[in-house]
Image (cartoon, rainbow, N blue to C red; front, top):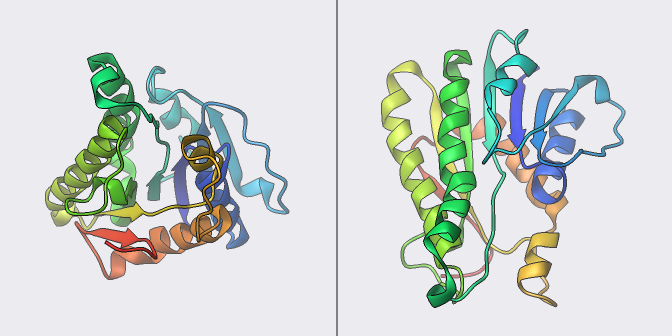
Length: 224
């Protein structure tokens, strides 16, 4: 039984990741701004915490897992999205996205540092839009650049934590059929469902560090 923290769990990919981890009998702390409404046979393994990663004091996370001797994995899935022409995107807009997509990731990782033991795996959910050379879309200057920053942050943390045996990897997701995608690009049909991606991420946080560290892995059926 592993102890896993997942952020951004009220819906979509984060919700399905939690569901998949519970299916496998792991303990999960699910963080989201709004209440997570999950029906599952193993709710005894689930802890939920309503928290705004950009605004709240994240020390409440430590209180929620005070009895955990270690954290075996973190899935930094929570993300803020904005589809807006660059000329209309203000510095405050950039800061709002970076607070969730980068700064909160760093802060939460620092907070649970002492519970990250050898063999722990920290996974950042990035985007294909954050990879240099991939296809880009107009209106995503703040979002995609923040996802690129997340990738670089995790490459650096992999080096800093290597001596402790803690692994950091990023998954750069392509299009996944979620409410966020539909809101940004109405009518688009993604090739992967949120449930399929959640199951993949659940497997990766548990096993991916056996094969990768400091890597960004494209998880997309389209090219480039």
